[in-house]
Length: 372
Ligand code: AVJ
Image 1: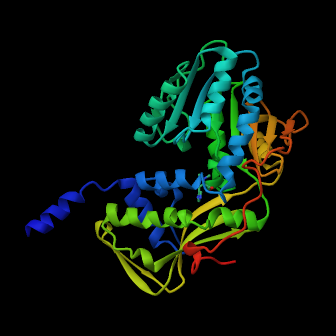
Image 2: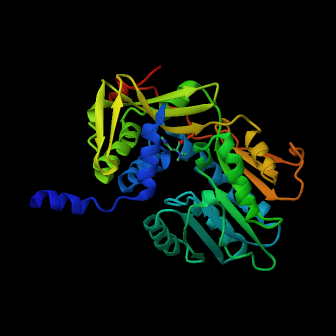
Image 3: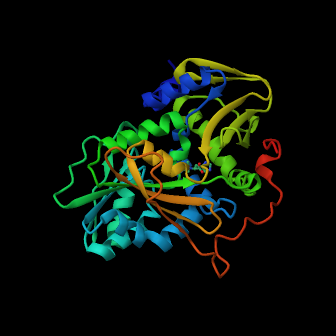
């Protein structure tokens, strides 16, 4: 073996089994797919943070506005006069969470916050930042895959309630067949009276939805393509980034935005670490993400079906996003919505982030990739 070959082998020994398996499965399937959790390596997480600040990406801003206005009411509803501790699923940068933590501190003084994430580095960062910014919060992070349930969390202390945060429309990556059981597993890890705060993105005009996933600056396109950058690095693949275009479409019958990477020409890609060659026809796509958008009442129904009585739902004035609270209950009635407190924010009286999306300018990212 030449020195160069040895060095190459050495840099490639750390192949993550979960990544390898997901990629082999997805790229040998028909149609081809890759799971959205592959987006979030270090570069991808940074690109996602950038997405959350784009003018077209209303999602994060809208949810933040709802939390800014209503965190106090949400925490009070969840606490029911008891102490609460907060658990967050897929905490990531935990930016919006601070609003809820601050509201809990206001109500009860000290707060225990348990962020769960598969990324240890994200959790370490979040712990440092939050404990510095809100000293009354103790952060007890756990590296775990919450989609498998909440095993290993300590039981509630007497007289205490746990509030699970599942915000950011992260649930939107799962179809109904996956989302239902996921929420049921969360419910199984909770005690009667505990809460689940669920953030969901709502159905709105196709124009607004498409703009959010086809931003003018091309950040979403870079985020989508970063998956190929990752496979090149981690699996010794030779994806030509220029040969795949970003495409985001609105699938109305499934009520979801779909993201794809579309092969611009017939080509063969090699993934050395998988000992795999993959052929693409011109125009063939890799489906990289579903982002489900919900009808009014759908979040309440999901909660009820998983064993949570829906007790409150907070929305922005435009009805673009909803943050819904469910309480772990026995024999939840379907739809069980009679008792739901429905709150819509008043229309903002100053120019705020809730203003309509600005008109689209030239879109370098999707010139070839956008189907509209
Ligand atoms: C993190 C799943 C809520 O679906 O809007 C953003 C991810 N993908 N732009 C979403 C995402 C493209 C985001 N979620």
